[in-house]
Length: 83
Image 1 (spheres, rainbow, N blue to C red):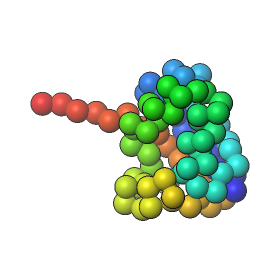
Image 2 (image 1 turned 180 degrees about the vertical axis):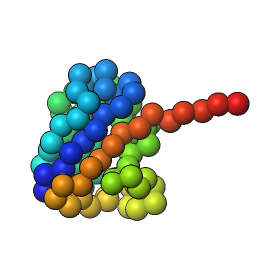
Image 3 (image 1 turned 45 degrees about the vertical axis):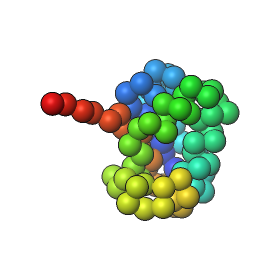
Image 4 (image 1 turned 60 degrees about the horizontal axis):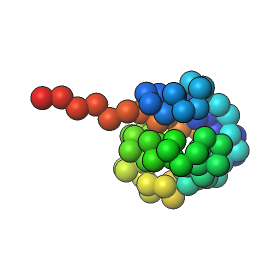
C-alpha cells in the first residue's frame, strides 16, 4: 500500500520533510521506517505524538496495529497543552 505520511512539529525537524510516500501495511510499518531512516530519537518523538489515519486517531482504531489502505494519509501531530 502506498500511503502519504505527513510530519508536523518536532518530527519534521528530524525528517527535514513535510511529507513523503511510503509502502506500508500498518502504522507499525510506518514507525519502523521512521526508526530505520531517521533514528531512535525520531521514533521516540513520533510515538509521543498524536498519530492519525485520514484524520482519525489511531487510539480510536487499533493503535500501532492499525491497517492501512492504498492512498491513506498518516499524520503525526504534536500534542498541545495549555492551562
